[in-house]
Structure formats: C-alpha cells, structure tokens
Image (cartoon, rainbow, N blue to C red; front, side):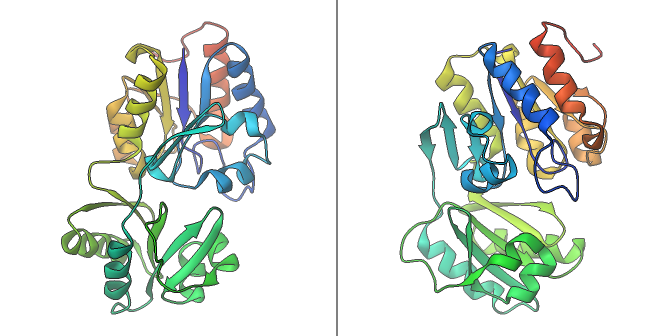
Length: 268
C-alpha cells in the first residue's frame, strides 16, 4: 500500500451529505501517517474538493482533480492540462442552440456561466447553479469546463455524443444525469493515476483506487487493484477487480483502515 485514490461523490460522500464523513477522513489520515499517499480522484477542482473535506488539507494534499487535468502531491501541483479557449467558444455556440443546455467553466471553486441559464444549471447540478456567476467566454485556456442539460439521462448522453462528434480533440463522459465532463483527448482519471504512480515511483500492485460511476471507468480499468462500492453502476462494478460495501456504510473507510493494518480486505 503506497498510493490510494478515491472518487468522492457516492464513493466516500453519501448522497445528500455536504462533506466527507469524519470517519473516512480519519481513515485517510491514518494511512497517510503510515507513509501512504492518499487522496481524492475527482471531477471537482481542488478548491471544491477541499470544501467537501471541511478544509482538511492533509486529506487533499495528494489529489487528482478535474478528472485528471490537475495532479497534486504533498500540496504541490505536479501536472496541469487545460481546455483551449477556442474549444470553449465552439462548445458554447453548440449548446446555445439546444433547449435547456449550457456551459460552465470555473475559477477555482467559482462556477462561471457562459452559456445557458442558472435555472437549467441548478436543475442539472444544484450546488453549482445556486452560486454560479454570469460570465463571458474565457480569454485564456481553462482547466475545468462542464456542459449541462436540464433533462433526462438520454438527453445528457445525446449532449455528450453531439459535443464529441463536433469536437473530436476532446473527450466527454457522463458522471450523472444532466452533467457532462470534458477532458483533452486521451487524458482522464486513469491516465492521471498512472502518471502519479510513476511520479511517486510506486509499483503497480501497491496502488488502490475506489470508484462508483462511469467517470471512474478509466481509473478502474488502469489500476490493478481497482475497487467498486456496492452502489456502483453496473459498468463500474464490472470494471473493478474487487468489490466492497456501500458508500453509505463507509465501506471505503473500512477498507483503508484494513490496508493500514497490513490486511488485504478484498476477496481473492
């Protein structure tokens, strides 16, 4: 056990909770105290991840943020990739032609709405919609950009399909109904996890990752010891090598504690 990475939403953050439970944070700090690099691997920016950990900097000092576009270790950024401003402009023009769709980019934890309405963003991602600010198109490349639609799963996937067709230099995935992640082609949570593994000089068998959803698939597929919580989507469960209990039961915290004790908590 040298590197542990975990998704946040519905993996260690139960639905409806505003911060990662203290019990999980304690398990992460315990593994860190034993020399293991531990942190979130999330679609959120580091500033927002820190909010979800109640400002516990130790738990996010190692972090893969914005679906792999930013990688941190020991509190320092060791890698950053961006979405070109010209691509943001093209996406904004496309979503503006679609009913109830829009585009939001971020300045740290602040969502900036450059296409669509705050009402539709609130329907797709309530926490972002409530605090978003209207903004023009960015004049510079940006790290975190999301397309959204106030619609069902089929509409969300159609939005991702359309954007993928029109912008083949980018990748898109659907972490939840109404919301679409955007990454440079070929770069994602899985690529970032392997980058961090190699940056730290960790052997493949000493890396553990935990996830629950489609935006975790690249991470679950890239890492040998991949683990899905029991509430994972069918695709995530199939991609994972190991399986544990539910997010709501703090199963990841139990697994991290067991690994810290030198136990192997997964069925072989």
